[in-house]
Length: 585
Ligand code: AMP
Image 1 (tube, helix red, strand yellow):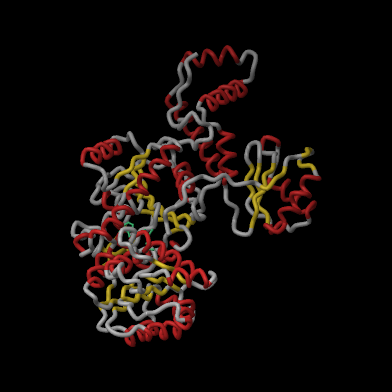
Image 2: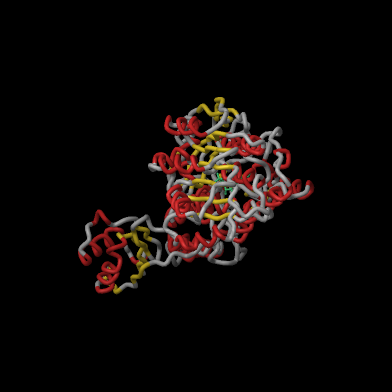
């Protein structure tokens, strides 16, 4: 008998643990379908990624800093970098209105690296950060940018043994990145001298003052004498920040990115909040759930496009990277494949995707959040073209949330939060697609030969049993590993904060229903039904989330009891590591 072929469902790989790729054009359904927004007002790209954007070299950066940038895979300056770097290199004071995610670390980091002298052993640049995390992150960022400058970057912050910082400072620190309290501490102890500091950056000035660091900051800035440059970076400009700039800055240049309004129509915008390091897994789930048509995935750096495209291919998707590193013929080949539908996902940097006009793109995914609203508008404008509707999806992790809020404010519209699809959502989606494909075959008319086979079988079996057997064979022949994939995805599910996920060795096929689990947990472990979190019932297993502090007790209680009349395996689910850490911040 010929092996039945199925139009929409196709195994992505022989490996049953691989996520199944569902072919485009399948009927679409989302967890909570993003609504097509009414035309909204959004800014016109004034500083957008445009043909006029200068290169890093044109900003006046020298060979050593340019080498660092190239190695990091940055292709073009972000708007704040394009504006701030030349001004800082000229020695002017600036007020830069920008928040995390706009590329501001490099906007001040590159000039301060270039303005420092590696042959002197004294600190020549000081960066003040409101929190320890930011101090570490920014020091790390500057360190990477300055890899070829021979400069030493030292973070100093509370919570780390001060002795270690004494040592690092005495060995010669060229750039010191610290929290105000710890910087003052070092100044008072004489372990840090600001005599040779030529440039001081007050990063996240608004947050710094909101955290009550005004006095400390004033004391530090007063210590920096002589001809020195002061740069303020702040997302907002409350009066206290403005007063501080007046007191300490000399004729500062105010750099804010101009915004004009324009309309983004026909694109529905949503975002998914992703636990740290889980962007790739989230992307895979969203793709499985949405079954999009041609999709563009935006990343920040060349390296990211390669990493993400590789990881997607490993998971069975047809993905290609597109970045500025590729020569023209590679680029043409990748674009041809995408246009002709041989690849479904184009993982691109902004530069590489500049001006790309492919009408069929149904989805744009911001794997990394855009660094400003202009870039956001430019990216999402790659879909919803030629009168079609499109979906713009942004994956947001940790601090990127602030940036998202800012983008929302600037476009004057809400970007809709959507829950990352669970394993059950995806399984339900696959079943829907399976059914839809069947209905399509039925509508197109079945072959006489098959009808005859059925007629010969219904002498001994019911028509329903014959159909069910055929479907069972078909489902298995698709090699979609329904159970394995479903369970594996479910096992990798991250519990909500403060919750623990329990594995239950019983599922839908055993007649398990949510009520059975809630009943057993509330009765046996004496926990209120309200505190029980998400319940995922799969075919052969189930998962339930319960408050962390009750986890051991619930496991012990459930192991003692029976579920649907059976002793069942109960365990704390250990999440599967789905690999790559996001490159985010
Ligand atoms: P920041 O706003 O400084 O926290 O930067 C946000 C992220 O953008 C960091 O991961 C940087 O490595 C990245 N980034 C900064 N500038 C660029 C650029 N010109 N091109 C690509 N990525 C960048």
